[in-house]
Length: 287
Image (cartoon, rainbow, N blue to C red):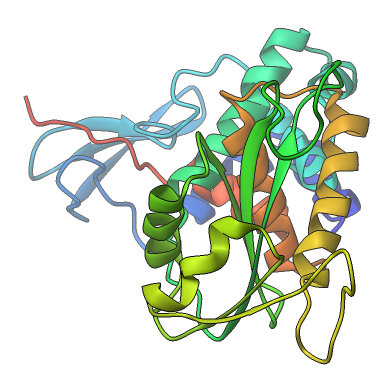
């Protein structure tokens, strides 16, 4: 869905509030501490506040969420989420919603953290392409495999189109074995290039086919065109939109790109982001 879909919510703070309210509590208001649905409703400046009848805990819509304590209008959060769905840098977001670049960057970081924390990673099955890439700025010296100034990213893509990418510190045989067994179901068919690190794949319980870049790229169903095409989309996005991404924050950018790719264009990504932003995943201990 487009930014135009959210025009009424963006223009009205009250509409934003109740939209987020429905996303957090589609049926009944639930206490974020004890999960009870026996709630007293109160009002504070036009917004609803609640008190749990079971544990006497006072809470509001944003209690225990990623945006608890925010001083920004909710309409700015909704607009920022819609722009994030379309793709925007922190500098661009700061101009659009009239906040500082630092605040815009923190908002985008919260969106990416909400995506990462809600991911349920089931093992991939069937035919899976595996490839690694190296992300980082240009520098003198070796490029590609073995470049010391690059961050290693390994990616998986099933033949049904699902992608998954992650940062790895080193890419050695033992680490690769653990990673493959963690991410891919045993018995699946792997498609890789001729890199020697993939040689033991059969002994790890996988079927294995490989291409030879020096001779051919596609032979029937044996290819890695899908994951290589994904790298070709991911890298220009990181460089063109964000200019540079630190290794520390790169996993968040990868999670964003993976989710957008996997959900497709017909999904209301903005609603998903807002729902996870107010999901109340933070643990609130009893006092």
